[in-house]
Image 1 (cartoon, one colour):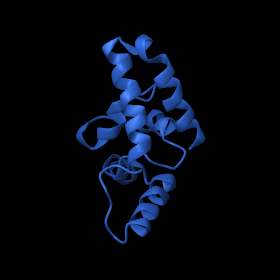
Image 2 (tube, rainbow, N blue to C red; image 1 turned 180 degrees about the vertical axis):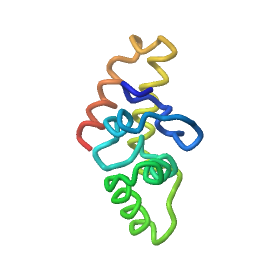
Image 3 (cartoon, rainbow, N blue to C red; image 1 turned 90 degrees about the vertical axis):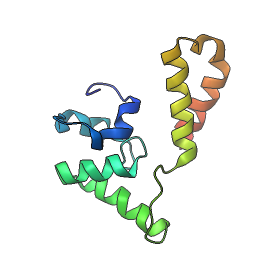
Image 4 (cartoon, rainbow, N blue to C red; image 1 turned 60 degrees about the vertical axis):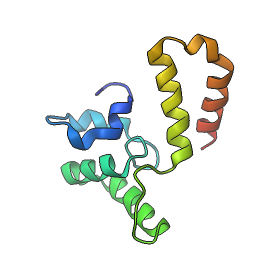
Length: 108
């Protein structure tokens, strides 16, 4: 988990003894951890990372004080489905679809 991005980054708030120096290197460009406001808020509490704060403040402004459990949802879903297909060992049957998903993510 500390070396490559996994779906565990979406649930950091439930894990003890994390190596934040390594995890901060897996942070998304927007400052989030896998587009999870709760994971990002936990990371902010543990590290005082300003990129986390910026992501959360943008979400709070964008949603008029409330924050969804995942934002942006479409980005999260594209990444999540690729991860699931790979973990199930069936990604070879969906290479075209995975490429389309990755193209979408890279355009973000």
